[in-house]
Image 1 (tube, rainbow, N blue to C red):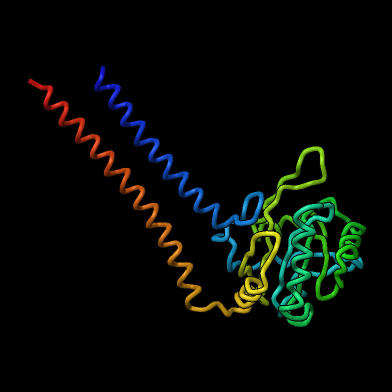
Image 2 (cartoon, helix red, strand yellow):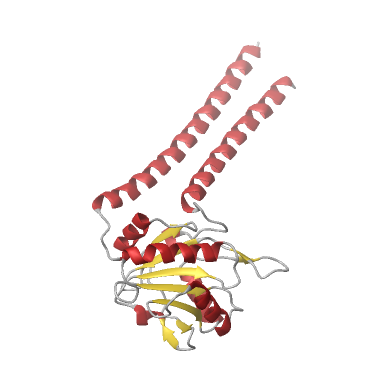
Length: 256
């Protein structure tokens, strides 16, 4: 009976170690992909380098245009919703401070504040543009033509959000997306306040200026992550073998 209880306890230790390893890996993934963000972050391994769909959009003048009408220059895409009273205004105000230091919207790059709220209409995006002093040309405030176009684009950048019951609020990741001149997703920046050097570097990525060191760094990170997981799994296997061997030795000593 004692040996049975001991085996159960040892098995519990192994299960706890496995659970701890899984929790550690989950923490590492979320910590690096969700900094300064709420909601579920995009799966960058699925989206980076992928081309966006040429969806139909509508600007604050009610004019329809296609996303690819902005091709030829990098695009800084900022998903927002107009009734937001917390993160979205802070993101927009942060961009207003940094963007003039990076270049001229409409000449060097485009900025696109796109509402992801399907209930936002023309009046909503007009009010948002006016409230934040956005020019509407180099920096456009827009909505999707319809839900099909909206969710096709949101799915492409893996932007997921949830509505808050009995309110007009949403839980969503706080981020901006950098798109290359040929409409490929190149970089995400997370948070609500952005630094000039980070945005300048991200624009460089969008223009294909990623350095060899930056590429190596990405590989080193994933190799290190795999190494951490491998080390943890190795320890669990070794401990399991040790406990099993210990149990065998005890069993052999009790035999006549």
